[in-house]
Structure formats: C-alpha cells, structure tokens
Image (cartoon, rainbow, N blue to C red; front, side):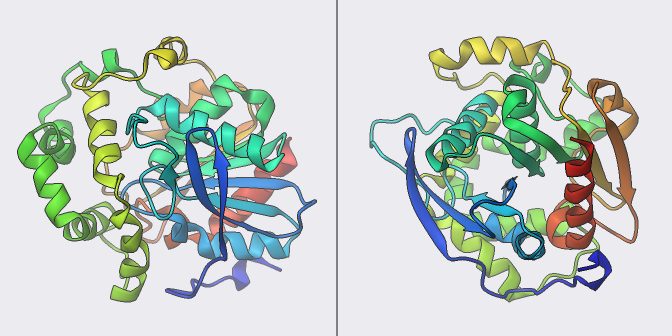
Length: 311
C-alpha cells in the first residue's frame, strides 16, 4: 500500500485492547498485525492516548509489522497492581514500563516511535537499552531531560509556553486539573495543534483515557518532578544520573517535526548532534501540529518503514 493512499479515519474503532501484567502495572494495549512480524512499539503522550496511532497502526499491521500500542501508566485501562505503588511519572520509570512490557510480551527488539511523553520515553529506551531498539522515530527529536537542567530559567517567551507546568506545581493546579481534565486537554489540543480541525468524536474517544483513577497523580508528578518539586523513586537514581549526562543515541533514527507545532519543542538543529547512528530529520509542512501521528499518519508510517530500512 502506498502511504499516499492513507487517510485519517477520524473516530473509528481501534483495538481490541488486551491486558497483561508487566512490572508494577496491569497494562492495557493494542497488539495487531502478524505475531511473528517485526515489532513496532508506539508510545503516546499527554494529553493524548493510543488513538493517536490508530491510522498508523492499521497500515503497518497490513504491511506485516506487529504493532504494539500501550496505554501509559495513568491512562485508559492501565492500572497499578498495588494500591501502595508510587504514582510516579518521572522520565525513566516510563521507559522501564516500556521495557517491562516488551519483556512480558516476549519481544526482544522493536522499532520504537513516540511523540511528547512517548518521544522522551523512546529516547530513554534508545539511550539506555539500545539493544532493545532496532530503530527509532522521534517526534520533536531528543527530549531527554534532567532535574538540574529543569532548574535553569528560560527566556520569558519560553517560560510562558510552559504555563501548565507551573500551574501543576501548585495545589490549585492539581485541583483544577482534577476537576477540569477534559476541558484542559481540549485546550492543549487546540494550542498545541492550532491548524488541526479535530471533531468532538475524535477528542472524546481519547479523553475517555483521562478518567483513569491514577491519571491526575501521574501527570502532576511528571511535571513536578521535572522542576525538582517531587522526588523520584530511589531505585531509579542510577538511570537518572546517566540521563542527566544527555547520552548520545546510536540507534538508527528519524526525527520528525510539524511546521505548526504549538507546544514547547527544541529546534532540530539543536539536537541533531545527539544522534550518532544513521540519522535524518524531516519537517512536515501544511499546518502539522504537536500530535503528528494523528495529524500526519501517512508520513509517520513512511518514517517507520524508512527507519526500519536503516537497521
């Protein structure tokens, strides 16, 4: 199938959603395509869910790939196995979740793809566990961070773009997100993808994932951890120390960016040197915003197939 033949299917069903115990989680995930096909793990961000990949997963599965799309901790049907588990959202724990899911599914190696939190998670996987990553497609490039880097002030315009991070640092912000999470997400969708004309059905299909009982706690922890306002789990300190050095990524990689991304994101020239393996960058035109997989699914399909050919 030519990628030019692919068109968004709006709010069509995507599934079935399966469940599997993996580490501290009971993970909800979609697993489609031939079981023996080359695995592609696709990771969503905030405030989005697995449906960002519905129009990417289906053609990849038809092309012979095994496509795995999990709900991150705090989203959809994914649940913690213990009430006592920390509702942690720090960058390394999301990558540990992804590696643990691959282990539970018996997948030794996968092409990893992501945007927003999902891109950062894919970056961490490729940096710390390159043997598990055949290739990577990362929207907005290299997103690994550290609490030390997060402590450095940015120019005023850049700080303003992170307004929600500072809102979430307050108890008012936590309570506001708890009370208005759907309206909050809709606002982010509009500001992060200003040219994307999604309909109500498309939004509500994803917004259901935010009703997860752990969603608010994980989201608030994620953003507070970045600013050093919340502690991570001590057993992850060694991973975070490695990530704080901004390790290079040697996994074959394609980075993508939309020309209308309204969310905070680095410039491609600023991160190109972080990728030391076979690498290329592509900026998509035509008003493509932050949720690139859902706004430009054909281009993401093509990038995943091209990155696979690099390996």
